[in-house]
Length: 566
Image (cartoon, rainbow, N blue to C red):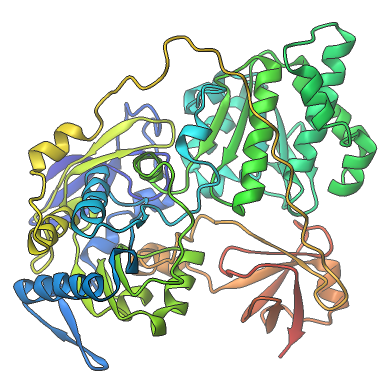
């Protein structure tokens, strides 16, 4: 048996693992005992991360659409068809008619090649390297007002403030650090809409009304400035900041957020007395405007405390950080005038829904995928890609650690690594692609881009966007967050035997009293109807939500919603 070091290809923790290969198959994985993040542990997805590699449902040959059917083709024919379709669209309409979607699951080298393909070969401005929606550009996020902190900083802090962070579900390796902090007596304040596994263990859990995170944080800023003023510790810009939060007094904030004034003041006292607080925030889980406001608030709280390096931003996918760095000013995807797509992997969430919704308006789609996913099914050319165990490259985890993926297997017969596919597409499109050596030399290079000693002048607080307005027709707020056994579109999860066995059907959670008032029975499907769409899903009662709130990890709808019996 041969062990090859690699990195887990799910969340952004970047846990180190060894792929165990025997007779041309991966038969298991083992954790890296001295890895600085995972420290000899893996979560359920990590332990089973190899199982989908040998799924019988893997794509093993390129496919080209002939009418309504997909037919097998040679690699030469498929690559030619892909290049011709993209070139034809550009010649007829212009480069703006082609959109490229990357993935936070791709390696940095693959993302560099996709960017090169978009900029040099296709000349398109529609380049979206990750399928979560960044609320701030990379330069705006890391503007010098704070630096990110890592998992080891969590255990070293004396106060941990979690904002909608159910790390056990979303970033399990960081959850381990939180449990260590609990064992050491670190105080924890959790701010969330839904009770989670840590809520009952926290020093204080502020169960807020949906989408009021920024309002509550501005309330904490208001109180922090009051505390500073009493002690005569005014800092530059204090008056401007105080003016921005003048309307966020404890009574007003408590009423909007649904928390008591006493709990709000207790949270402020805990923050005021902390010498080394850490704010933990999972990025990419909110609407852009709401998330921008939250990060702006966290930066202000960090500045007030003088702890510029104490904000931990947790990215969603294993290489989302690199994707964001490579396209720092990437706009939100817009397919309104697009006629052709190139998909590196499967888009997630709203982007996937957008692609499926625009299918009838698109002339040509190329998909690089491991499986016949919903977006691959509608493609005109499908190019079968390799798994993370069959290719090399680098990824950057959420705290900025660059790690190397190493191949434990040759690519499955009939498949190619995405980097090879993109290089060959560049050649077919008539541009000289960079060599693999050039790509590897550039990826991960350290550059000095910050000014020499320039002091940050701070930033303006972002106002929270208007709150959704439930009414008699749509009385329920809807909240969506990931859970452990769900991952993006679940394409890999469903092809992983152990996870598929544990895989539960789609459902939505409802407060138990609301459940009874609606006259519902557990396990019975209901219709969720919103102003922008509807879906049918089973409903479960829970004590984790306050009244008037629905929660799901499976449904992509925007609230407010109403619930209809079927």
